[in-house]
Amino acid sequence: MTDEITALQHFDDASLDAAFTTLADEVRTTAAATASTDPEAFRLHWLGRKQGRLKLISEAWLKSAPPEAKKALGIRFNQLKQQIEATLEAPASAPAKSAVQGIDITLPGTLRTPGIPHPLLKTMHEIVSVFHHLGYSTNLGPQVESDFYNFEALNFPENHPARDTQDTLVIAAQQSRPSRDRLLMRTHTSPVQIRTMIASAPPIRIVIPGKVHRNDAADATHSPIFHQIEGLCVDTNITFSDLKGTLDHAMKALFGSDVKTRFFPSFFPFTEPSADVQISCIFCGGKGCRKCKHSGWIELLGCGMVDPAVFAAVTAERRKLDPADDAHNPEKITGFAFGMGVERIAMIQHGISDIGYFYSGDMRFLEQFA
Image 1 (cartoon, rainbow, N blue to C red):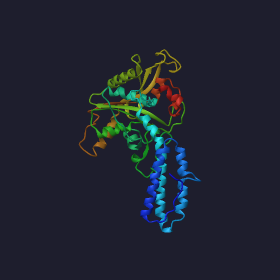
Image 2: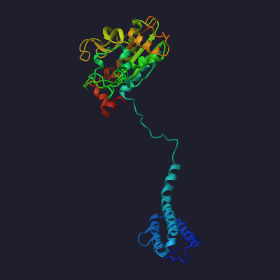
Image 3: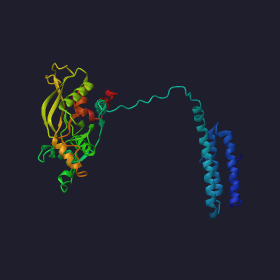
Image 4: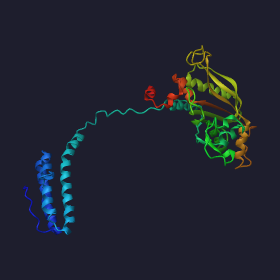
C-alpha cells in the first residue's frame, strides 16, 4: 500500500476501469487490516481532508482530466467513495448482529401496558351488555339527521320548543329545503327507532347507544355533547308490565340486586303513557342523603309505551314502497321505548360530581379507571 498517486496517462473507459479496480482492491486490503480494529485510522487514510487518498486522487486525476472524461471519472470516483463509506459502517453493525444472536428467547418479553376504555365507553358497554342478555340487538344511526326522523316521525308538533335553535344545533343553509328534510345534529338516539321500524317488521328488540347534541350551556350536569342509550321493543301483546319488568331487571343488573325501582307519570311526545323511572339511592340505601337530596330516590331515565302516532308515521313511510303494508298497525301491535343518559349513570356509579371531567382529557382523572 502506498500513498503515492500515479498520474493517469489515458482516460478511456478501459483505462479508468483498470485504475479504479486497483483502488477498490486497495480499499478491501486496508479494510481487512485496519477498518475493524481502528476504523478512525481507516477513515483518515481514505477520507482525511488534507492528506486523504480520495483528496489526492481528486487532485491528481480529476483536475488533469480532459473535459470529455470528467463525467466518467466522476462516476467512478463516487462509487469508490461509497465503497469506503460502506466499509466504515460494516464494523459498527457486526456487534449488533452478534447481540441479536445472543438473545435468550426463553426470557419474558417487555410488558406493554394496554390501554383502557374511557369510563363513558365502559359504562355504555355495561348497559348494552345487560340488554344483550335479554335478547336485544344493537342498532346505530347517523349523528346528522333530518327533521323527519328526529322530530316529525316522533310526534313532535311543529311549534314544539325542542325544534327551536335554542335547544337544537341545526345545520346552516337549510331554509330552502322542505321542513322534513332539513338537517340537524340529532338531539337523541330516537331517530334510529324510526329507521329500524321503517326497515323491519316486528318483532323488534333493539338498544341504541350513541352520541347526541343539544344547544346546552356546559355546567356540572349538562354538556352540549353527551351519550344516550335508548331501547325499543315492538311486538304483539307488549304491555306496560313488560316495560316495568325489563327496566327493573336492568337496574338491578347495573346497580345491585337490592336496588328498587319506581315509576312516576310523565310526558314525552313519542310515548303514551309515559313515565320517569327512579331507583333507590345506592349511596344511602334509600334512607336519604345529600346525593339523593334526602329523598332516598334518584331519577335515572324516561320510558313509555310507543305512541300510536309514531306507528302511524312509520306505516305511512312503509306504504310508499308497499301500499298494502300493515306491519306496524297500532291496532295489531304495541311496544315500549326507554332512554337513559350514559354520563348520568357513570356519574352515579363512580360518584363523579361534574360531567366535565369526562371530557377534560385529564389523565389524573382517567387513570383512576385503569
